[in-house]
Image (cartoon, rainbow, N blue to C red):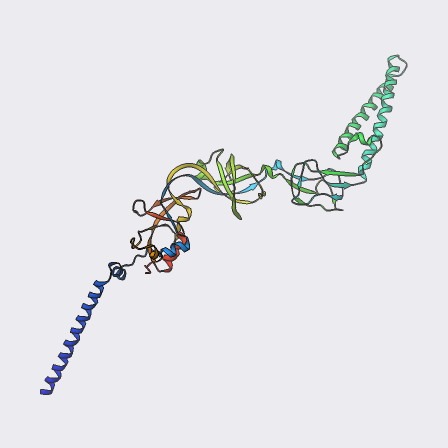
Length: 411
């Protein structure tokens, strides 16, 4: 019984000693925590998933710049897609009115040609027969005129039969009709009738360009046989290039003549071009609810080709709105944000300590509006302090720092 009492006493003493040590450790921990700077103490218990911090050195190395939300006069724009087209009156398919074999080709795709320029020559022995008939009929007309005049004098003096005079008149009229027909046919061949009157017949016809422009395709080749149904080449005049824009029914009331369109090529968005609306379609395109809007391309058209797809912005009206540089807005998980900067943790640090000074950035949700002249209209979805500094350059890197650090401060 005495041994049992001794054991119980020892166990109680050990338990009492352990409790005293635990309370002393807890007190020491509280004392140490009380000795820490307020900032460090708070950091142990406070995290904000919408903030991140960068040192002045990091800010300088990644090129972060800050500014203010500005009031900017921006032009609202309607986004649309379309294609470049050349009107039919500014494109030509080159054909020949006469059958023949291509003897020479003087053009190639991409080459500029002028109206009336010889682009090919065509050979056919039948060309000679038409010219021979022209010469023969022309000679017969001279004789017919002499006979007509002679029969006219005889008929006037009752020395000749009236029937002979009428026959001479009919013959001369028939020959003149035929010579006029042959003259027009020869001119269509590109031959001057006055040059063959002396017997200089042409065996090779010249095929000329009907318009000025750029050769878009050449379908014939030397030695190939062509006729009315066989095109030799196609020429396009890009100087009258038009833009066909497709605007949906709900946006049609916003469109009017003389509005300016800024557009870029869908596959080469680096350069911007301008066009002016001159006509609005009056029917829907196919089964879609889109209406074709026609605009004339203005200025330099270098690099633009018929059939290219474009992305356009139709200028609507101007308005003064709160805006930031477009690069200041970043998108994260489907929401647009800007970053505002809090004051540095310690404004009293010396210049030599600036490299370790930190600035905290907070992301602020916004709704984007009009984008123009490098600025984007924003609507704040969360209140911010007046004259808050906004990250206007390098916002993407701030977002990367925040997401990579899990949204916590990294001191």
